[in-house]
Image (cartoon, rainbow, N blue to C red; front, side, top):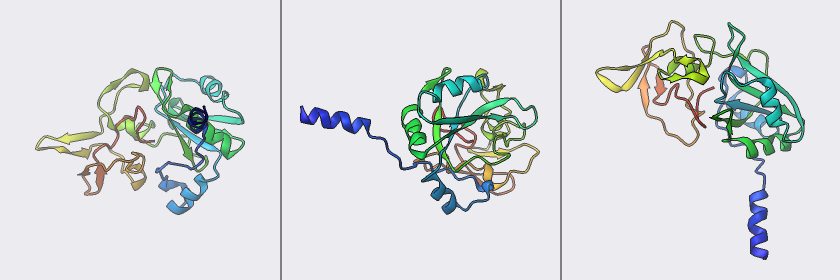
Length: 214
């Protein structure tokens, strides 16, 4: 009985240590400052949402955890329409940590969503940074995803002479913050060259179903 009780208690344990390896280089914070903020943050990033998922739906989901303060929808920066991500704020860090433990990886509105610690929402971060105004992941992918705007913009093309390499074919210059190598937890992505000589990970722009670029 004691062993069974210990097993049950272990599964009720909430890990408050942030596991995110993402760093928003455009936040104005150094990587060390970003990581430090994660230790006490009350803000969560929610990714891989359907474009059709509403703020009310997200609020209802996260209201199942105590201390929900507000939900901020991620928007296409041109159309100001939802584009598949959101920020959720709680009143305390331990409440945010409980939400990560309970909801990360859950299937919500027919998609497996990612819930991750974030260093805090600042003005402008609620807008997609891709060339189309959506997230880069949807600008780079070529597949069809009805829940995320249909066919991707296909701005990352494989080279016919070397299928392991891809090149960006869009018009907008990509800065280092568009490289999602730190969002892919535990992965050591293959590297490929962009047309200006900078390196991008092989998983660049790929959806997450649990893993993806913001």
